[in-house]
Image (cartoon, rainbow, N blue to C red):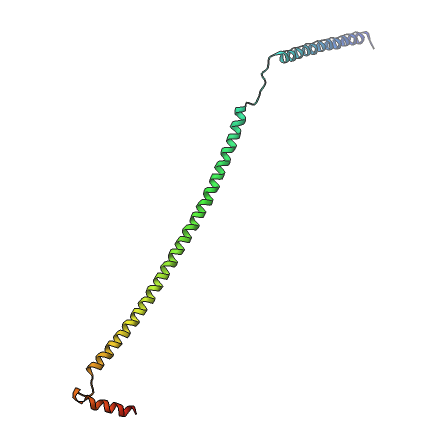
Length: 152
């Protein structure tokens, strides 16, 4: 090795030492600034965040209102279903009553027609009896005798 290398080598070592000194100095200043910032952050006045009772009550009120709305919606649906069933039962009962009344009217009409027919038959039989005489009134006693003979 020659002398220039030794001199350059020595100056290279001194450069490294100088750079290390500058790095240590920069790191030391950084450390001091971090400590200063931390101390300032710890020493400043702080306000504690406390959940206010209003917020708790507001949250509880919100949940309660939501529950009431859900219960109201469900009960309205149940009520509507119940009302529809009641209407269907009433409609069915009315239809049954109408059918019974119609059947009774038909039965009564049939009875009336039967009675009318019997009445007409009786009336016709009476008229036939009154109008149709086999013998004149003067000869009626003889006609009765003949009826007795036929009966024997």
